[in-house]
Amino acid sequence: MIIAMLTTRTSSRLRRLVMAALLLVALGGSACSSDGSTSADTDSALQAAAETSIRLVSPSEATTLLADPPTGLVILDVRTADEFTSGHIDGATMIDFYRDDFADQLAELDKDVPYVVYCRSGNRSGQATSLMADLGFTDVAEVDGGIVAWANSGQALVSGG
Image: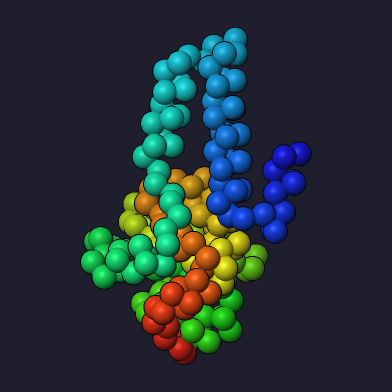
């Protein structure tokens, strides 16, 4: 019910905070249950969560990351083809969030390389990074405010496909 209340109008940061709180409640509840799980089960779940780095970065932080990229960095644009063509971050790969096979396309990506993910304003990229966390991606930076914030901060865009 709480998840259903997190509409598209809710900020991606708030959605992540609520999801993190729900995860902690669920982990705490399982540690206290009598289903045979142990604190070791909870500890390994917390360790797995700690090994996954899904974080929100400002356009400035993203620029710094792109200036000296870690090995294998993928810049992932989750907007539509028309949006991508009208202007995107140089070197970005596009996977359209609205395609029926979006989750399948994400699942095919290398989960162990770093990603910078963005959309127009942060809604789709917030949902995409949540899905990436569920799929086991280990290093994902989401551009806070998306391409709108990127452009408004004076960062360069390239046009075309």
